[in-house]
Image (cartoon, rainbow, N blue to C red):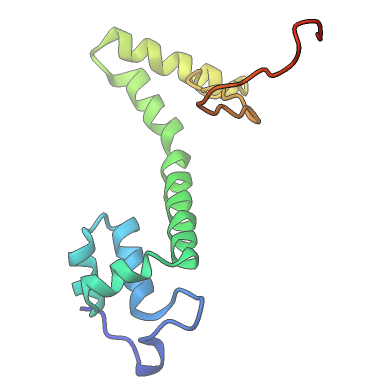
Length: 135
């Protein structure tokens, strides 16, 4: 269990700090389950669960997850180099070569998904009450 000074044990209003921060960081960066992270931080699982219902706490979690993803992505080219040179599977080596070339050319990895933004789809009926002679 992490021991913090008394003034650092509680989070300040609308901020993530103290034991809650310790628990949330353990969930994101150490891949601990919520109950184990709460126990490590010295708070209850219920307290963590209740905190996660607050928008600023969820914002902190999103920031930490984005940080983790960026941290992991930074080493991807090195892992691709290893796969390209050492994999016994020819298709894996070819895939690594293509991914490296895509990254070098600024195309990403070729697995991007295009999404239509601004399209609003709504289920229902449309009643046309116009007279037949109107366009």
